Amino acid sequence: MERYKLGEMEEKFAELIWEHAPIRSGELAKLCEEEFSWKRTTTYTMLKRLCERGLFSNESGLVVARMGREDFRAALGERFLEENFEGSLPLFLTAFAKRKKLGRDEVEMLRELIDSYKGE
Image 1: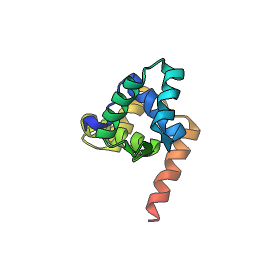
Image 2 (image 1 turned 180 degrees about the horizontal axis):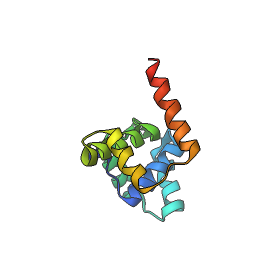
Image 3 (image 1 turned 120 degrees about the vertical axis):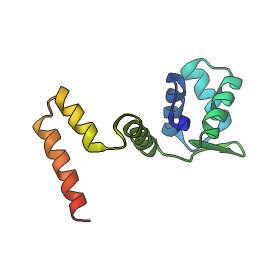
């Protein structure tokens, strides 16, 4: 599950790619120079790292997202639940609700989500 753990700059870099993908690697290097003051080699090192984790691919100089932003966030959530709550969403919600009162809108949103799964 290390593939879903990103450092601060890796996360910013991933967001930049998701925002512009598909993008040519040369153009990405220019964006990173503007955004982060990175040298071209830093961009390619970081890109290689995230490609090895399966988030992106760089095929013939074209950087493409292999995992979308929402899928990545869902995987992070699943990892968090597995590591901290035995994979149980109800255990997490119980612990969360003990410390933070849920608002009416949040409760209604959860109720609608649960109801949508009852029909399946």
